[in-house]
Length: 453
RNA sequence: GUAGUUGUAGCUCAGUUGGUUAGAGCAUCAGAUUGUGAUUCUGAGGGUCGUGGGUUCGAGCCCCAUCAAUUACCCCA
Image (cartoon, rainbow, N blue to C red):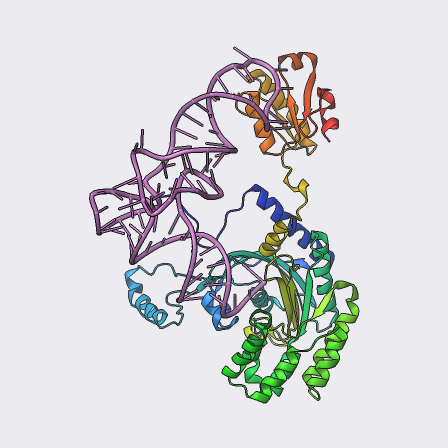
């Protein structure tokens, strides 16, 4: 048997990492709860047809599909072969695979709402912190299994929701110490208006894909791509002006309205952004008309969070308003808006900027040295009251040299070691050494709890 | 799916135009110290040089294939 390995893009997390990740999780969850959101968990797998067609063509390809069981049963042979033929043609077939790992948290949430809308109290505010899977090529900041933290509100069209979700971003990133983040905002309505003026709605996707690349490939290549996608010169020149819009948020709004004048969508989108911005003055929000976001179910405001400029990382969060997500599952008229945190990328950014507090890595508070069998039995009894008081402590279970026991304590970042040998048992005193300061004191057995508290 | 880079000890890496028995630091283990370590000293273990072919008197080094990791494109958190 050769060395075992992990599937591509999947990771183990050891203690240090888990503690840091939990710090992020608990910060986010606390803020969600604080804003009145309630938790939801959905299964790792969904029916494949729940997910297919919801993320665009590229998204469909990245869904991890699960092979059906029992394909080797002789009575299923013909069906399995038929299904395999379809798969070879690039289609998916329920004869071969009818389940898939979830790709994000939003679609399973919509599916949940579609099933349970009769029981839910609207507006329904839920948060969800779970892993999702994508069969993407892994690279920096990109994994095949990663955790999303979503908060969504459904059953409310009020822009107060957008304001509050922006507030959640602000609150979480402030608490994490990531204050230099930028929240970018745009509206799908403005992008629609642009498309209507530049060749019609069927170009919406082409235009958004192209302009989204502006800061990566530059204006000339964007223009070339637009031409290649079928736009004419005057349309391209409007888009060039659109992309050239700069200034303060208010100036940008004024310019976009005058550029795309007399369009219902642009007025509506600009008014919405204007309202949100006026309510979020302290949140460091920046209008970015090139912001598009891939998922095609967004219809209104869209958000994206950019990491501080000092680190190279794509977006660490995003979201937006969708008017009709549950309609995909036969339940119309439930509008919603949501945001997501990319924990794995936030982790990478915080690690790079050294933002994790040091006290995260304290597990065991006190280590009792093993000074022999009798002494161990005595120490074991002394430990119990400490544990009942919530003081985490452990006894070294091997009779090793003190040198080794010290090293163990050091590696586990344990604050105190407690030495109880025959002399200490006789004198009813424990030797307590503080490893941070090097100081050591005799502490009566009865005073240990208070001393270590 | 496309392209670049990298695979040598548990970890981080040296390794000369191809030339004796492949090295270092850290880590591990054992001993100077049978009750005070992390910043003393000594020693030990540990490698089919990713895998499989080829060229050569001779390959860690050159060639081909393959696998894996990683980065970029596409797309995305």
